[in-house]
View 1: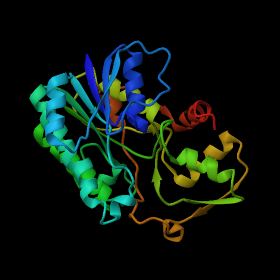
View 2 (view 1 turned 45 degrees about the vertical axis):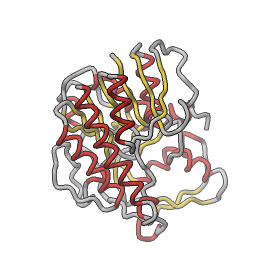
View 3 (view 1 turned 90 degrees about the horizontal axis):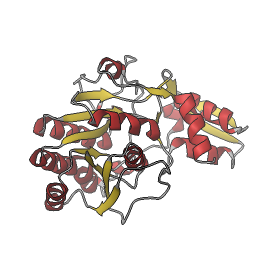
View 4 (view 1 turned 120 degrees about the vertical axis):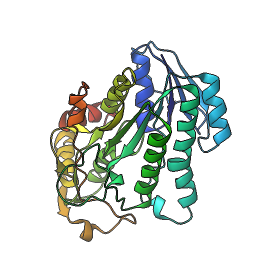
Length: 304
């Protein structure tokens, strides 16, 4: 099998490429940057190569995919700066990356008869209530521009392809980039107190664990919409931070605050980021480990 991975220099793409290589699967990583990041797993046996690619360039995407002829495309690349997406100066770029480029890749996947995995987000939903969002829910109501463009990407994939996996996730953290865990540890070591929101509810996702699931998926034809975060129940960002500090031996005082009182974000965030992941087991996929276990592994691996 040959797999094409976008966003290979990012948190998730980095781990996906490594996971494929560990399984002996040939991987071609791509990013607008000049090359793959380091820290490749020593046990990896699969062949890994890199091609620079601007996914907003429709002709370049089509030419690259047709030339490489992958069996599957795992589309990890995205504009993920949620607050930055609200700036009018960025909106054209955000739309090109999250919506138009996803359509470019879906069209190329169709021409190459390749499976496609698209990584999406709970932000496609409105975030009201307390019921976990199900994979087949269609009452979309994104609260911010990031969520709107990710939804447009979803719709493009579902409209153009039959062989697709749309995987929504939330609260992502991984070794190869900025994330909440690293930010909390750094803040705790510099400050006497740290304020954290306690009325947004969801579940964290470790990219290392998500990458394993995505690699499992592309070896099947169990297509459709899925939700994937780590197991361990639904928590607030404050609960998340408490566990991070416990495991990292950070004694800084955490102060729980409401979203309204926190008041630092340009983009509106959903209060309900609960994702129903039961479809994974129903389809025969192994759920991700408990998020507390994931935090411990991340802290050790990132040497925080």
